[in-house]
Length: 186
Image (cartoon, rainbow, N blue to C red; front, top):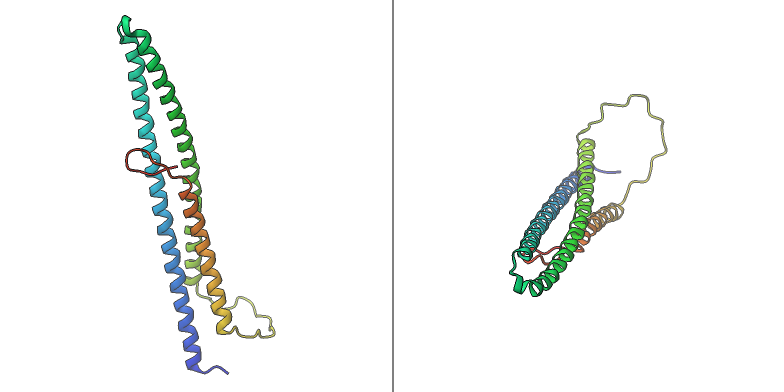
């Protein structure tokens, strides 16, 4: 039979677990928001790079028509090579931008799920039982969980959360490359 001190110890342990779960959920949300901000910055940088490449391409195209007649053939060959290179670079950046957009959508979905989960957990913690609405059916009492079982459950939950965060971080890491302006994207 549990003494009042044992009950108090179990109650304080459960309260500590709730605080830990809430702090961990807040930490996960903050991590996901930081990842979303990083991806948005990457997408903006790629858009700027594409605009600069298009301006360069326009200048090269205009330069082709302004060349002197005596240098026209040599200049046209050089400009054609630069235009082809610029167009292929634009295509690469556009493909990377599409990949980043998909990655942003994935992170936003993870962030939305994490916020919903945190809200549900908070609502269940704040929801106090108002008393039974109908008489409860007497059940055979279950054996109380041991400290080892409780610790194992906490460990499983922590491992699952870390796996989810690691999956998001891995998805972000796959989309990195050097853009020439100090940023790394893929």
